[in-house]
Length: 345
Ligand code: NAI
Image 1 (cartoon, rainbow, N blue to C red):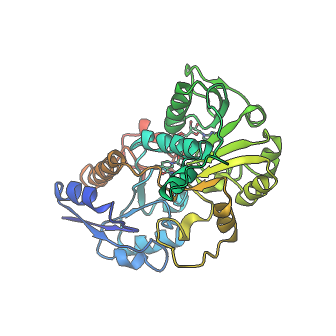
Image 2: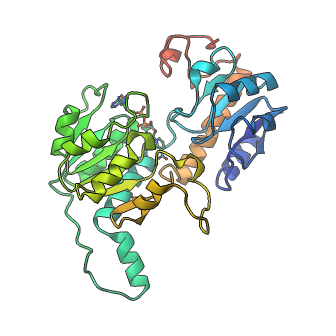
Image 3: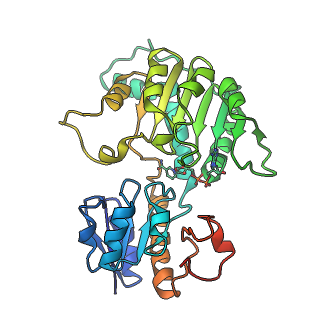
């Protein structure tokens, strides 16, 4: 029986993981705490740890897990910017779930956008209070508007399809443009200056951190709506706040926030939020924040549990070979599995 320490466990994680685990002789030690240097010891006796986006898997944590005999870090997310994959090389193998439901995230991005632009959140609160006035609820048509999509991978492509369904013109930017996609790729400056709406769907890397900052915002149209369902660090939150206060940015829809690590996923009602920037963003009438909720559909949760259990099994029962391993040996973190027929190290 394999035992897996499951960090940052939430009630909605358990049913699917318990079901898939039980079917494969695997037990999960559900821990409410996040993984960090102080909590790594809770994985003692476990062959693997299962982590999410705000667990810390830095070099120090990896060393502690390695000394405990943990062989595998199984991310139950696609993004892995919270894992020092380079430090893990030679010590602990790292697997992730490359895709579980890109639809969940793309649809949430559109849900946020529609809610914000058509003021649904405000109307909902008003009518519950039997206030049936329309003042201040004026939105704008999506039809005929230009949406700039940064990152045209699995989620970005679905988002562009949804936007096209609304009759929007799509401008795309990607470091590696998709061939034969029919998308109109432009440089970032063109995308910034011509888009009425900008939605980011690329990973957070050293290169993309703060790609939307003061300079980029300066190039944008007045009244631009910015949507981020990718990673908080893609946007400089201070610059975003400044742009909103100066009325340059018309609205922001945020499912992620740069400093979300200690805030999101928890009930902070009744507490005073120490994060000044997030407090001020939430206080603005044209900012909509959800707390990293875009992935949260039944389909996605089931797919995450199924793939994570398969990843763990293939590592322990398939001579250490797992197609979803993040490898640093050849430098091509995600794709080297196509070249290799053996484990990463
Ligand atoms: P993907 O790997 O299919 O697509 C990412 C795209 O970004 C690729 O086309 C890639 O070429 C492009 N890219 C890489 N570097 C770039 C750069 N410097 N500039 C512009 N584009 C660049 O990933 P997928 O599945 O579409 O996910 C996108 C992001 O969504 C993930 O990185 C993750 O951060 C985020 N995400 C958020 C979730 C949420 O619940 N809010 C859930 C799942 C993913």
